[in-house]
Each structure stands twice: as C-alpha cells, then as structure tokens.
Amino acid sequence: MKIHNTTGGRIFDGANYVFLALIGIVTLLPFVYVVAGSFATEVEITSRPFFVWPNEVSLESYKYIFSTPAFMRALVTTILVTVVGTVVQLVLTVSMAYPLSKKQLPGRKLILNLVVFAMVFSGGMIPTFLLVKDLGLLNSYWALILPAAINPFSLIIIKNFFQELPAELEESAKIDGATEVGILWRILLPLSKPVLATFALFYAVGIWNDFMSPLLYLNDNSMWTLQMYLRQVTAASDLMASGNIDPNYIPPAQGIKFAVIVVATLPILVFYPFLQKHFAKGMLVGSVKG
Amino acid sequence: MAQLLPVVDTPSRAESETVRTTSDGARGPLRKRTFRTQFRHYKWLYLLLLPGILYFAIFRYGPMYGVTIAFKDYVPFLGVNGSPWVGVQNFADFFANPDFPRLMGNTLILAGLSLGIAFPLTIVLALLLNEVRLSILKRTVQTLVYIPHFLSWTIVASLSFLLFALDLGPLFHFLNGLFGTEIDFLTDPAWFRPLIVLQDIWKNTGWGTIIFLAALSTVDQDQYEAAILDGAGRFQRVWHITLPAIRSTIIVMLILAIGQMLNTGFEQIYLMTNALNRSVADVFDTYVYFVGITQGAYSYSTTVGLFKSVIGIVLIFGTNWLAKRFNQSGLF
Image 1 (tube, helix red, strand yellow):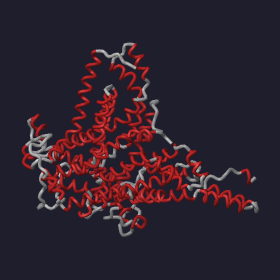
Image 2 (spheres, one colour):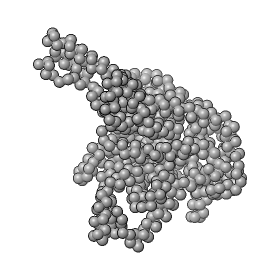
Image 3 (cartoon, helix red, strand yellow):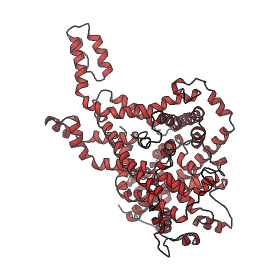
Image 4 (cartoon, rainbow over the protein chains, first blue to last red):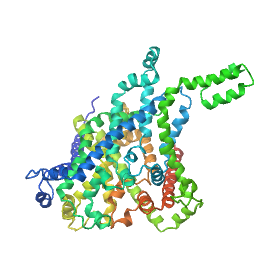
C-alpha cells in the first residue's frame, strides 16, 4: 500500500526522523562518554568536561582495577553466582512448567491459581528477609538465587509454549515406550532451545543486575557482588557525607569509576543482541491469556 | 450407580468417592486402586512438579504468612509464631507518625510525575516510531532505546553520579553553564525528583513502547486509506484512527501503572538517596528498609509494607472498576 505524501507530511517525516535519531543518540551518549573516559588519563577526565574520544589512550584504569583483589573477587563471585543461579532457576522453572502444561493433570488448576495469586500479592521485603534469615541463608550466595528462583511470568509463558507444541510428538514417543521425563528431556527441550535460551538470559540479567538481594542478605564486604562494589566505588564521596563508611577512605580516582561501570555493563551489551532477537516474541506470547 | 460416577480428576474427589463406594463391598477396593493408579500414572509429573511447589510454598507463601507480624510485636527470639499479638497497634503507630504524611506525599508526587510525564511520553514515542517508514531507522532507534532497560539501577545511578558530578560532570557543566547557576544536582533536594524522572524516562520509555507498537501493528490499514480519501491529514489520522485503535491497550497499561503507583522502585530511590535529600527522597519502599533492616523494627516496617500492598490492590481493582464503569474494557 502506498500512502500519498503531501509537503506537510514530508516535513513531518523529516522532523520525526531527525528527532528519533537524536533520541537514539542521547540514549547512547552516556555509554560513549563512559567508555571513552575509561580509556583516558586521569588528567584528561578531570580537565575536559565532555569527550567521546580520548586525546591520549591509556589502559591505566583497567590495569588498576584488574590488579585490585576486591574488584577481582567481586567480578569472579558475580560470574559464578550468575552461572549457577541461572541454571538452578531455569531447571526449577522448566521442571514446574512441564507438568503444568498437561491439561489432564489432577490439581493443575489449583496450582496455577496459587501461582497467579503469588504474582499479585507478595509478603514484602521484611517477611522475606526474616524467612531467609530463619532458613540460615544470610551471608550465603543461595540467598541471591533461591528467593527469586521461579519467576511466575516466565513459568506461565514456558508452560504455554509447551502446551502449544503438537501433541502428536509426545504420543508417538509414548507408543515407543518413552517416559514423561524422557519425553521432556529428549523431545521437548531440544524443540524449546530458543525459548529456553531467552529465559536463561533474562534470569542471568536479573541475577547480574540484582542490587537489593546482596544489600539485604550479604553483610560481609568480602562476599560483595559487582553491583555492590560498583555502588561503593561510584558513590564513595556520597557515602561519606551520610557517614556510612570510614572517613579515612580515599575516594577512587575518576578513571576507575569509568572502568568499573564498563566492566559491569559489558556482559549485558554483549548478550543484548541475543536477548533482543527473542524478547519481542516472548512479550507477545506472554500477552496471550491462558 | 458407582459405574456412572465420572472419571476421577482430582485427588480430593477421588477420596470422597472412595468413601461413598465403600458400602459397595466389591467396588470399594477397585475405586481405591483407581485413585492410586491415577497417582501412579502421573507420578513422574508430580515428581517434576515437587521442587516448584516447594519453592512457592516456602519463598512465596512463607513470607505471606510472615506478614502476620504486622499485627504482632515481633521478637526475633520468639519467632513469627511465638511473638505476642498486638492487634492494629502497629498501624495506629504508623498513621500517628509524622513520617506517614511525608512518605505518602513523596511517594504520590513521584508516582504522579511518572504517570503524568513518563507514561504519555511512552505513547508519544511509540506513535512517532510507528510513523517511520524507513525501516532501518526504525529498527536502529528501537535497538538503541531498548538497551537501558537491561542495565541495573546501580549502573544508571553510577552514570548519573558521573554525568552530574560536582565540578566534573559534563551535565553539571552544561546545565549550570546554560542557566548561569552553581547547582549541585546530586545533593540539592529540589533536583531529586527531576533526576528520578529523568532516569526513569531514560531507562524505561523505550522498552515501554514495545507493547504499544505491538498494538499499533494490528490497526486496520484500510481505515487510513479511507481517511485519506476523505481528506484527513496526518494528525487527524493519528487522532481519529490510531489513538482510538490502541485505546484499550492504553487503558490496560494505565490500570497496571496505577496499581504499581506506590511501588516507586526500591533500588532506584535507595541508590539516589543521600544525607542531604532524605526529606524528599524517603518513600514507602526505602523507609521499610531503613526502619526494618537497619533499625530492626521488623513488625512496624512490615506494617508499612502491608499498608502499601493493600493500597496497591485497592488501586488496581478501583481503576479497573472505573474503566468498566465508563464503558471501557478493563483488565479483568
């Protein structure tokens, strides 16, 4: 279909294109500035108000952070917690989604209703904190993984996905003598790879980005995750104002802040194209009731 | 009689039928076996279901039971069950506390700014993107504006600290140079709310357009052609065709947004709070943390959290009712 365009329409289109391009650039600029700053010398960061390319490329900031034990510990910890957490959360979600995709399973409706109710109402921060404390999970990395192990939205979307797979696949496997677990493992999971990869990425991003759980559940500085470390580095001067940390603490040089932000952002940006490929589809599947 | 009963489909029903048929000596054991067979038939599925059920029981419903401490005087040593009941004393304390009107005000102002500025901007951005026929531009802009959604609030806050840093930040220089001022945006209480709204817009507006763009893609294209034949201009077409077509989506999203009004986002506010802006920064979510976790007032802070959840549920059902009242399709 071709819509005839008037002069006014063309002017609008032009202005709209320029405006949207600007929006895109404005969204991107903070990253460009931080990346440029992370490769700049301390002198350049403190003397030039804004730049997208450093005059003198320097790796000093990265050399410094990668030789800082506290940073390395936080980085390795976060990677491990993210990998283990993603596997645990995905396995739990799939394991629950599959039986719930069987319409004939007795008790299915009740469980689904309870899941939906948990989406609407939650106990809140303090009762969850007390539960984690009573379970002895304070200062344990499991506290970052288990309380949010199954996302009800993801559960229902994966359940719907299993439900929509052709039933003939399972029936023929059953005739061949496959068990339920065998069907899930050998037939459904290989078919669901793209969907599961998407939800794995969403879980991974959630754990990587989580700030509240480590803040609530990890009291020990040596257990901190990258987000906690980032917070301490970038807000150090501010924390001093509120008296939360040692006044003798010397705020890190600007360049180090830039480099830590880049490291904390990088994995998200690397995996973003894979996420983007699927999330629009995932959102649409999610909007279908059932 | 027994044979006419429907095939059992829930365990509880199977049991009651077993009881009913025990008078019939021959049928009793058979029925029992049927239930057992049913269960045995599905045992692998139930086994797969078990970890999930345990998760929901412990980590989702456990805290819901823990909410009872809002009506108790929680003593860690006595636990949730052992602590003495105090009725609505915690609520009375909270409503009498001068913090209450301040928290309510701060929370409502931030929610109002979000609903009044960020929400319409999302629709405007979706409409502008929808008007783009140059698909490479559309896809590029979409790719860029979705990115911030995936970044943590810690990164967003850190970026803000760098951009607005006193004497160093690019935006500190740019804005102060533009207006000839000497404002420290990060600590000035007057700038707390604009910063929060700005972060919110930067992080979530792009992502928010997805649902509206999906709704826009279903608009019947023939209507536009008919409108053009009738001489309707670009803006008239948007006003009379596009917007009405996505009205139900807008209403659903608005109901959801209003239901979430009091959830100001703990991480964002916490990260932007400092000693100088506490008077405007304190909202229900961060107050629960400061009073509950750092000061150990567990019962009182649970009360504050419960109050917030209940208001949220009232808001979502209230808006839904209003939407239906005015003949719009509601959420449920």
